[in-house]
Image (cartoon, rainbow, N blue to C red):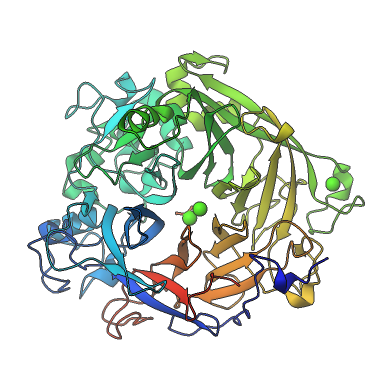
Amino acid sequence: REPAADRAGALTFKPIPPNELDSLIVPNGYDSAVVIRWGDPILPGVPGLDVRHQTAQRQSAQFGYNNDFLGVLPLGRDGRRALLVANHEYTNEELMFPGFTSQEALTVEQVKVAMAAHGMSVVELERVGGTGQWRPVGGRLRPYNRRITMLETPFRFTGPAAGSAWLRTAADPKGTTPIGTLNNCSGGVTPWGTVLSGEENFNQYFVGGDAAPAELKPRLARYGISTTVRVPAGSRRWERAQERFDLALHPNEAHRFGWIVEVDPYEPGSRPRKHTAMGRFKHEGANVIVARNGRVVAYMGDDERFDYLYKFVSDREFRPGDSAAARRHNLTLLESGTLYVAKVTGDSPAAEIDGSGKLPSDGAFDGTGRWIKLVSGERSYVPGMSAVEVLTFTRLAGDAVGATKMDRPEDVQPSLLTGKVYAAMTNNTNRGVGTFAAADEANPRNANKHGHIFELVEDRGDNTAESFTWSLPIVCGDPADPSTYFAGYDKSAVSPISCPDNVAFDSAGNLWISTDGNQLDSNDGLFATAIEGSERGHLKQFLTVPPGAETCGPFVTGDDRSVFVAVQHPGEITGATLDDPASTWPDGDFAKPAVVVTWRLDGGPIGS
Ligand code: FEO
Ligand code: CA
Ligand code: CA
Ligand code: CA
């Protein structure tokens, strides 16, 4: 066979070592640059960031805080312009406001700044010279630039639960028009050129669950909202700025978050949508593939310890081409379909799964699985729950059908080359502890600190199939730790990895994995490995981010010349503040979340 280094798409870069530097580190032969950072103006008429004079109006026109998901979509055909779409998941008020003492002590205007710093941004980019570097197009009004904020951007509900009683509020008696999007974590770019974004930990923004109607309390509690305490610890106190965050007054407001959002960046005036047909949970994100029969399939994770993996299959078929009619049609694909949850079974005797991570006697953590149908259109398959109830309280539907409790499913993404699906199980330190569920073959380590990668292969290679096989190609950690596994590859040649969060692919089909919460005394970072052939499991570290940051995105451009990462919450270390920072990246004064692009100095493809 060909030596690995000679194959197209082979990952030949020299891995970087683990480190704790307050810098963004890339391999020899590469360079990196900040594309855009928190507070950079993206709409006309606002100044740059001045931390002592922040207003909600300014923040609503500046790049938001804590960039997580990134999509980079081509603009025109010459490869010189693109649209960056970024999620702004949450805020770190202690790192944003000088003199911060507590959430309670923030002014109402500061609370509104935080609300405006949540949401999404669309930013027009241009290529720098002929290189893999990109920067925002400056100088005049950019028609595609856009801010979507939690403060005031209207959305539209689609699908069977739109307008239902659970979504109606005093401000929106029809239950069709929620304001803003909350805690947007990961996402995906669709084949029709839109961006999907997952509303994740929305529970932390609400108070007053103790005074919610009794019949709602179990449902609120299943989503992590306290039903016994008025103001739970860590609450953001947004009810001080907008009353809707007080569930004692507006108990349905919480149900208007936890959805998959779709934004069309090519139509800056379009109203973004929340698709109820895709279910409601702590959505990490959604990634779409067109199945052989033309239907589109979205894979999704619910990022909570012991929660579930889901997929959505559209009723209608994808229409190829970029005609206006095809685009209009494709924009409806996620509005109706069938929602499934995964039940996963190991093929080794349960007695061989002892929670230590020791491989069973067949040499693999692997097995089969079924997609259990929860709801299709207006028809529920869950006894005792209506279709609207299944869609609005999807976690309870998953509980009712006995779905498999996973170790925090984060990004779930199909390879467009093979149709195989890769899911990051980031960690689950409660696995097997006390009365919590013990290890099983798909989640094989108790007190799972470092996480693992789950690979799912649909039967017959059909992404609409209702059964699959699966295996764990990577069980993360220090390769010297016997509980780790790198697809059987020589462990002396792989990089240590902990807490996989986001996954992506380059055009050769290599898997890129970014991490959040490294438990190995090193900063978080980005890794890459082949997933087919003899190099499967040869994981190498490509970059690291500053202390306290998680690495998000990542996004490899279609020409393989640039990899974008989002550096989220740099300097988020207990006790650190803007006045006493743990990181001063990227500008040397105080930490700012930012988007970074990395490219090869000689212009060659990333990774090789
Ligand atoms: Fe926002 Fe699941 O990470
Ligand atoms: Ca097995
Ligand atoms: Ca994440
Ligand atoms: Ca991804």
